[in-house]
Image 1 (cartoon, protein in one colour):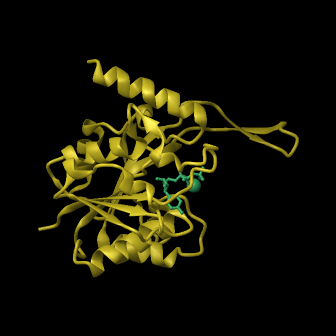
Image 2 (image 1 turned 90 degrees about the horizontal axis):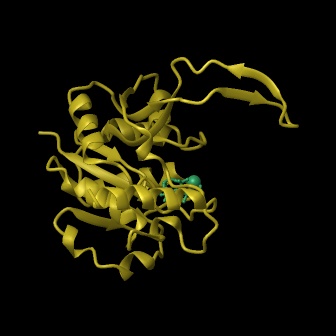
Image 3 (image 1 turned 120 degrees about the vertical axis):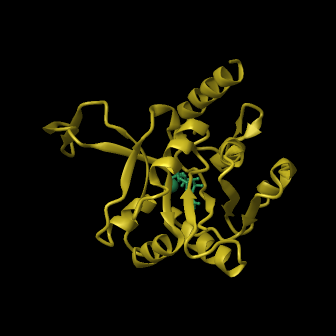
Length: 234
Ligand code: CTP
Ligand code: MG
């Protein structure tokens, strides 16, 4: 039986956030940001393990008490210099430690998407568990798209028909994802699906919503806080 295993790359520095502390540890609703993604993944009964990939030498992780997630949560100090490298290193290390098997589904989820809901996660798993390739959560592009020149003048308005924004989790089987990331090692990709696409495969998109946005800039942190607080008050 294939298992469902979450993998959270958490070895970034959060340069666009502009804090000294990497953004996955910035306080959000009295918890480090990464706590919220772990908590949602942990609550899903199909997900049997959560692998967190830390930057080598990351001491911040160990300042928090993660014992409420023990049994499922494993931290690995194998982060790389890019997100793709962190994911690939994590996959390889997990296999060496017998934490995953070739046919398992891997759900790669950004530490910086704290507002993922249980329903979005369940939709992803339900829609893709029987899929040949795998896929990811995504949302149709809402705004009008402009292509510009170097002086910020519009060259063209692009059609947004059939254009979607990729989110995470991105869900692929262990062997396929490992091979794809290995092949794409120097390709400058920013998500897992791109690596799979480069093999000539066509991952499927599962409809999500804007709540599952990535906290990237300082103002995103305030928005995430409002969303999580509103949920807590329901
Ligand atoms: N990530 C990682 N290893 C890296 C770079 C990024 O594990 N070398 C992780 C981040 O920790 C985050 C996810 O990949 O959970 C998405 O990346 P992003 O939002 O770009 O985070 P950062 O790279 O930390 O931020 P920035 O690009 O602003 O520096
Ligand atoms: Mg980055």
